[in-house]
Amino acid sequence: MEIRQQYTFYGILLYVASTIFVLYLSMGDPEGTVWKGLFWMIQLFICINAVAKSFLQESRGRLLYFYSIAGARDFILSKLLFNALLMLVMNGVSLGLFLLMLGNPLVNPLVFMGVSMLGGVSLSLVFTFLAAIAARAQQGAALMAILGFPLVIPQLLLLSKISNIAFETVLQGGLGWMLTVLTGLDVLLVTLAIILFPFLWKD
Image: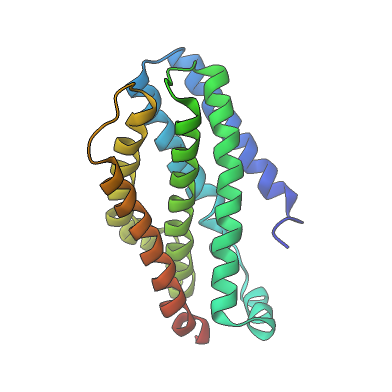
């Protein structure tokens, strides 16, 4: 059903392309630090537009239909998986456009690609979980902003520090610890979603 709504998918692609094109017109070929900051901010806004709407745009009738054919854990896991795959696609498109329009300051492009994919999945897990809570609480974007700020900021800081490896020839210290923390946050979010979503699903 998500794939059949192609206007949503193409709308997100248009948003990604137009945003990066505006950055290209205004900034040209930025230095590495600015390039990295812009990339992660664009990923954040892409995730909000692409992933968060997956719950907020669902009608009550459709949710009732899902309730009749699937269990709570199956439903939330399928949403997490689908949104993670969607963010991987959007991440690849935005990274390609960034390299094409804003230059390539990366010393290790393949490493940055891996980090960006990990970051895209992490952001999608956060906003899928928050969107599920906000949709059932009927508070929409306001509740997502309140809950999302303390969760997303540490994640973006971790991703920014981890992605430094792609801009430098020397391996930075503490990289393994940061990757462990980021992976631990992802596992924690999935676990919380599996535990808490059934209580929201019953309502």
